[in-house]
Length: 367
Ligand code: 6CS
Image 1 (tube, helix red, strand yellow):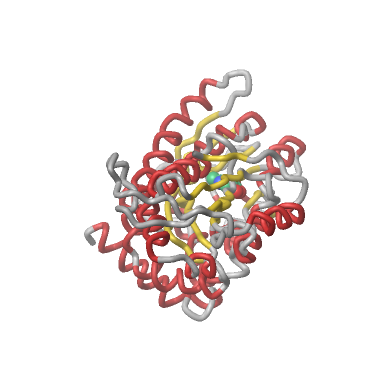
Image 2 (cartoon, protein in one colour):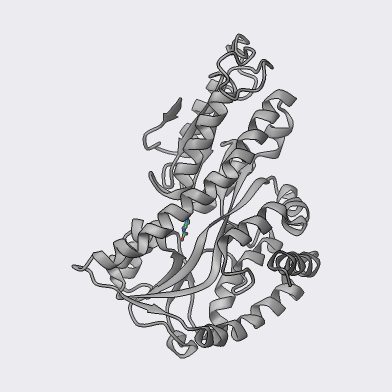
């Protein structure tokens, strides 16, 4: 069972409500749950867990990849706990901006959050690694395998997040990113002075500066209007998001650039997680593992469908430009500057993490 909340007036009032409800140590919670899985529903094998109610916030809205993921995760946890644990899933905008949500996770106002590293670049400089364009492969399945298995990411980068009160449980792709613009984006020349919207992380901005653009960080909640009114001229996102957020309606061009992959993280508040008993932690861990393949499928399905939907929207036509390998090479070369900058300025362990990740990607590619 998933409970969904309506728009909350403020996070302050949420804090009060949550204090009244209690967290993992719900005094009114009964311990009656946990049978021996007689119905074979994949619960935690008979271990009893306390009745609990948790909160999970995402950066997207109903039907989009992160929300589908979070709702399925909530269902799995509920099932595995024999109905003892319910998770309230909040969509983007219900609790604040993407950056507010990072703070809510750190403060334990929410137990779980999907956080994209694009919003943590100042907090965790090494997390800027995902801003580096043309670093990963074009094959998203291979990339997901690297994200699942990488020591650079799951051990060394994860440690950096934990130091900041954010425990990553899974890193996953939401698909290859593409550019949209109100003018064609095909060569670095096209980016000269171009007003590009990006997420917050400094290296994302720097990467576009290396192309000659004039980037501005902005919440996606303001992006449709920003593009419509000309405050910004273009943006990057996976196809599913461009289509679902209707950015194509206010953009004349879509460039299939595959210049980067959109990486996000399922995260938990570390104090909350470490305070749980083992049976409850196991439920979370199992649900995270089961969601790895599902997360990949959810994004693939939505991304596969999106281009056709954009092309079908003929009342708001969008010209699609597909970059050739030679054209991509021009950008790839310019992207080297951001990579060098990351090595030197991306935090104490930036160079080590980057070199290890490059090795891991090459190994996965069979090079
Ligand atoms: O562009 C953004 O900021 C948003 N894009 C995606 C794919 N998910 C959420 C994020 O905030």
